[in-house]
Length: 451
Image 1 (cartoon, rainbow, N blue to C red):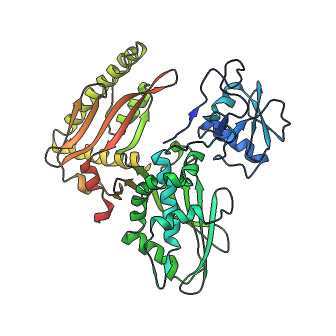
Image 2 (spheres, rainbow, N blue to C red; image 1 turned 180 degrees about the vertical axis):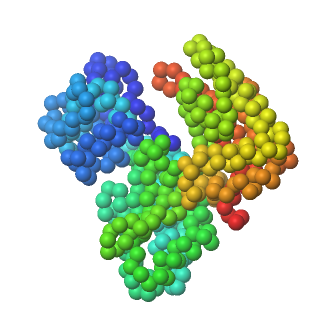
Image 3 (spheres, one colour; image 1 turned 90 degrees about the vertical axis):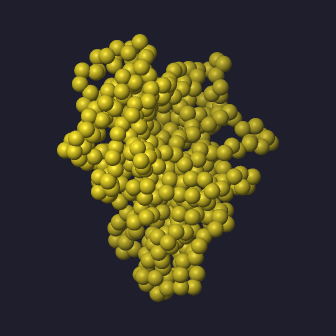
């Protein structure tokens, strides 16, 4: 779900034949190195945002701030903010480069830059947050009204942000109490620019219909009415975070309620793990044996005596062959566990637990929302799968090929989920991913809308 890439070419410090000249546009990366750099900058510049678009400064530019990264300071590198402030970063060469993402060449004065369609997943987080914000303030008479795309775009077009990331509005509830409703939007500049571009609105409008229908549902309307009708001074916040590291969170959009007296957040509500049209809900990346072993361990499948053969194949660049060997073995083990009633019951319990962990990191209150086309959406919950899974008869099937996979299914009711591996191109080679994807049967038994 991340649109930018780490800096290409040999080095940002290379001077000859380099694209990284003063004016070249950058952002702080969302990875571990970027987070360290962001934290160091925020200590001196609290209002600095990870979403800011920066440019490479001229080495001769006078520095306003000096940021020192942990470790040996091998190099210094200057970046410039849109307000003209120059930040000099001192640190290791690799640390500096890995903390920056490339955006594009310098803007040419007088030339209008064509704004491209942004990443759909990143954009969906922003659209859902804005839809929730619009819904909470759609107070009409004694009820909450249905929002439209116009209400959603008003959030971006007419509300003046309190800060670079925060929108705020106040509204009286039915009892006369004043409610504060705020919206924290942490998104990349590619998404922010696209959302404000009128030419892209027609295309983005179709993406917005699923979030709009989701918040206009019976549950969404009743939820918004609770704050409108309680006669208490609420402070309700929607947090749409598209910048924090994805490995550290399963919730993309959530709502918090702050105590107006103490300022403490009392509870987290409606946490959503968002999937914008994707069947994937978990992954174990990398070609190391430990990554693939961890994935199957969640299912109670051990891989004894396979590591040496696996590593030998990997060392001769036979990544797909190595994965196929493990996937075939694991499929056989799954079917063995489904061979008698006692072992089947134990495996089904283990599988239900694994699916919950993969989808929600074992958080009971997280809902997985999948946005489809034409305004469709699914809401899945994974904290009560076991009773439903006891009613299906599963088997595993290994499917070889360029993207070998294991399909776990019921012959009569369809595919529950699948695990597959593939190679993804990256700078300097390929990167292996092992992903877990839901099937129609899992969508059906985990459907929170039918409860």
